[in-house]
Length: 434
Ligand code: GUN
Ligand code: ZN
Image 1 (cartoon, helix red, strand yellow):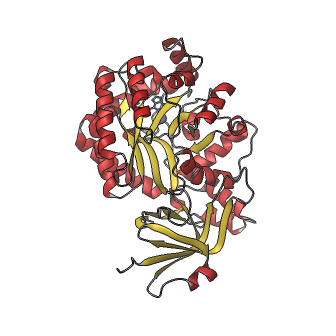
Image 2 (cartoon, rainbow, N blue to C red; image 1 turned 90 degrees about the vertical axis):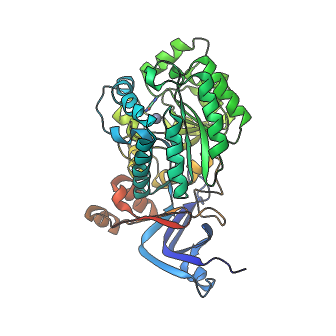
Image 3 (spheres, protein in one colour; image 1 turned 30 degrees about the vertical axis):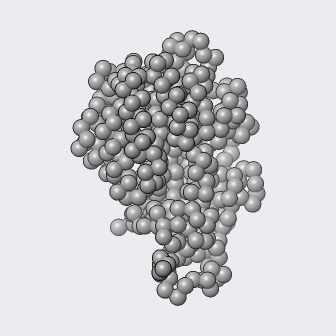
């Protein structure tokens, strides 16, 4: 049998084999490197001089010298139906949901609308260098269908799910405990592990689900343990108080989900700003993960995430945009905001840690290490090419960077989608700067 052709990419290559906060050897850097890809998977990442020898004679070589290849970014919490309401003004989370979010989500009853927004959204993700995302759809099953069809057509590794909400929201956006569970199970059967698509059971947040709905969602989460689960927790003080009134028997907001068996591996909790030590210990023990959403938390004035406290308990962490609450789809901008948020809590995050959180850290939080997130042999070939000279200011600053840490720091603080020169998913070029 003829073997598939090998494509090789020459650039400076950076990826991680561990968390740089815990292991000083975690970062792998080939200053003049070569990444080889065959059949949509990584063959190897190494030094150009050594790897060049092993290339088959018919390999295609692409020259990205002067640029940086890193694994595709992973955004672990984003609402595709909120693309059109990014940057909509409101005094905090609950008024923002009422004034903008619910009306815009109503439009997704129309499958044509869902398909059009899904196309635009995925184009934007590719331009931002994000190759995997955990995506909230709307309460309409058609919105999930539209999203997965578009993602599958591009062979992207995406996680998505139908929002469950059966109370405390407008009538036109409600399912019922039973219909929500039925739709979810149908969608799991159709889409979970269908090609690169993965399903996330998605109760929006405890206040918009009845106990009966949370019960059924938790049962599905147990019956299909390799699916994902995603929800919001402890984002905003008013929301925390509301959840407490609705579920007075729970010890804490997080404990509501715990009581319905939703703390488990592959469960991704958005925000986690107002949790206590016991909550953090439970998350670590259960293998549940956090999606830290800094641009959203700044925009909605929700609060500051406490990296040091979560690190002390070794909770799985990742970074996310939370569009439309967030203000940028760029994970570089998200890293910059995470850095500033950590500073306001007295903590210094290194650029290595920020890039780790947006790549291998997220893959680990999703139990997808070995599949995405770094360049180990056999991983799916999702990678991006960053241009440290994309803007005049970046070029000037990075010309003078004394170390890899300084170069990555400048990209995280000054970079955005303009710094993404090319995006590859499954070894196929999805986007290149015009
Ligand atoms: N909490 C419940 N729903 C939402 C949402 O759509 N966005 C944000 N940021 N928080 C939420
Ligand atoms: Zn959200």
